[in-house]
Length: 151
Image 1 (spheres, one colour):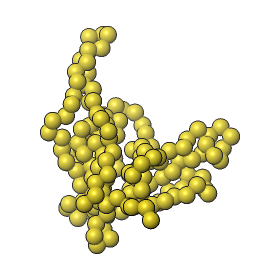
Image 2: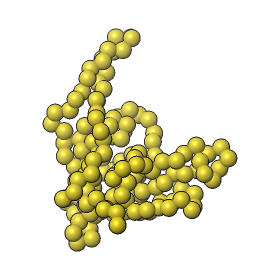
Image 3: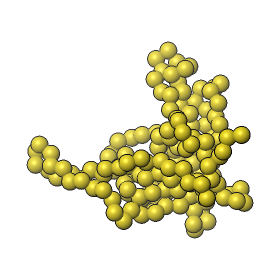
């Protein structure tokens, strides 16, 4: 039987935190490795299967997140997507003022309540870069973004 991780963490990138101004359909979840095992199995029999997951924060507020397997590559002639995403986090990020470098933790609680937590980054690895037109911009340098935590 496969081991199901109890908790996972994600260090937010600037794109995850909405700091780049670009639109994305949630945070990318890696297809390989242990992180994917944290989430329910969606199968591949239907186009873009999804499941709602409910997480409770430290204040007791419930957040609805959606775990989605975008798989139109296998269903549409011109489809290109074959990726897992976790959506519905934008409001949580905004309400808690989360930024790139901060860490979000998702935890399967012992009482069947899934929990969401965050930790602010103290020592982010922010690099200042000068553009061709002389502007100075910040770039967050991240290592591995997702991690499995076994509690």
